[in-house]
Length: 204
Image (cartoon, rainbow, N blue to C red; front, side):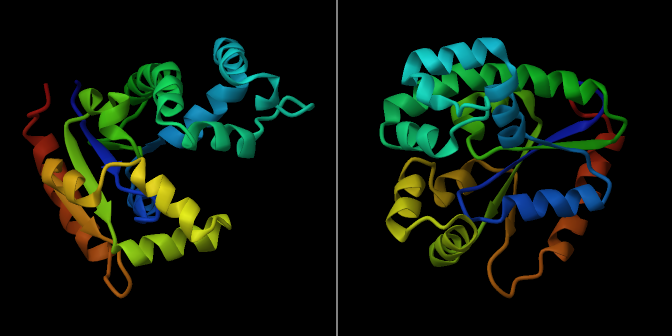
């Protein structure tokens, strides 16, 4: 995969994985945000735009061409088949974009933030997996506070994601990002280990 270590940052909704990603960026680790890249493609990629309209209708987009996020979300999260259809469209393109992005980086460790590491196939593009987790109540409160969603809406989204327990079983590393738990110390230790791995050039 190259001379750098590719780290996946994943975790359920409200786990705080984006906070961990930003902290790693401050520490000098380039981070590819799958959610941001995917949303960009949903507006800028002509093929993606046409396919989404075919799946869900012209209502996917506002009159100014911007994504009708609330409508798309209602379509996707109301039906697991719709989640699978959108994933099949978007995530191969995001994976290809990530691989190209890695080639442009000059770092011993790079990271990719994704909520659906295994479902999207991005797992095949990384060397190590970091799961960020928090207690269920903390995750619900965080998500409600930042998104305005109801508890039921948050819980429905959680049901459509892998559980924290399952993610932890599949991970190489974990970061607890719950209330009162210092994150920086955990990240410093993690980054030191990853840089050691890079120095020994064990990536394929």
